[in-house]
Image (cartoon, rainbow, N blue to C red; front, side, top):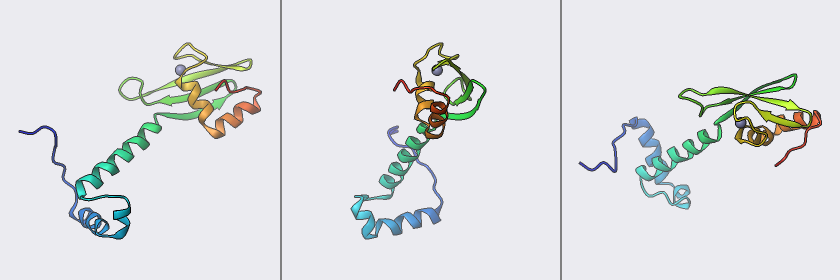
Length: 123
Ligand SMILES: [Zn+2]
């Protein structure tokens, strides 16, 4: 048996919508040729979107920032970042330069808040 592909069941009404789209001029611009290609591209886009949300900022209280990291363990866990003087220290990584700190500075609302606390982005 060919293990390269696996069958997935999709509701007929959704297939009808995709088929209608594939017949449109709009779909030719995106070079979709068949349903499988369209579904694969759509699923890849969704997976990329989900990957971006690995981190979720939960709160900033006093000098502690809590970030939910969905890739710790099997269900994710909270990481605490501590503001010390003009730096941020990650208690999980035991570092001042890690993915959690990069996430914090990449979040527009949070980075504005940190700048208001007289911190400077190292990135
Ligand atoms: Zn970290």
